Image 1: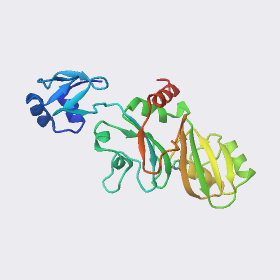
Image 2 (image 1 turned 45 degrees about the vertical axis):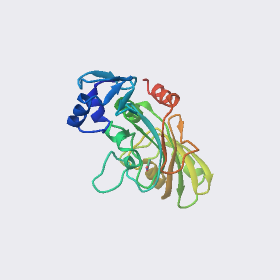
Image 3 (image 1 turned 180 degrees about the horizontal axis):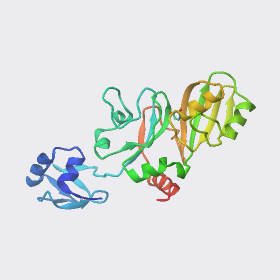
Image 4 (image 1 turned 60 degrees about the vertical axis):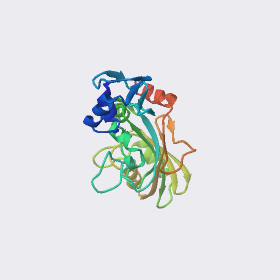
Length: 237
Ligand code: URA
């Protein structure tokens, strides 16, 4: 992404636009090892290397994150009253426009993607792309063939009929389901439609990406280039 040096530094939350202009004019900013005196010069944010006061700065504006969402946090870019998943990330992710891809309920745990790429975000959520999401649910009561068949035939949820979904029983009250839609409270509503309240819901996969088994609740990491490639290809980018 091509960007003026003053805007680049300010977008990285290093200082206000006027502060960073002053620093640049004072010879404090360098790109690719050369001091840049002109705040209006443009650079490639993903390729050029940036430093300020002799310290290397990670200048990438395009970042993608896998988070193990813990319970108790809202999935939102910001909220006036409650903590959000963005609070787990350094502030720079918010200032470069990293946003959650869809929503998990406050009490849902598991794989949440966040990206600065608006087009990728949009495509991953687009109903026409049928990106799969896998959930594990602990429910009240015991399930059996009746529930498997009901999920398979497409549940009537009142305002819409869910696409047929696979339900795999992992225990009498524990099941895994894979859906391609993402309506509000969809999985909880699907289980409620077959008479089972969800006690705990966890997302273990999004598209071809599995939640990293090495991650603990509340941890996050950037996606590897391979993982980003998988996601992008899966939605035709
Ligand atoms: N479906 C739900 O009901 N809740 C979630 O958090 C995700 C999918």
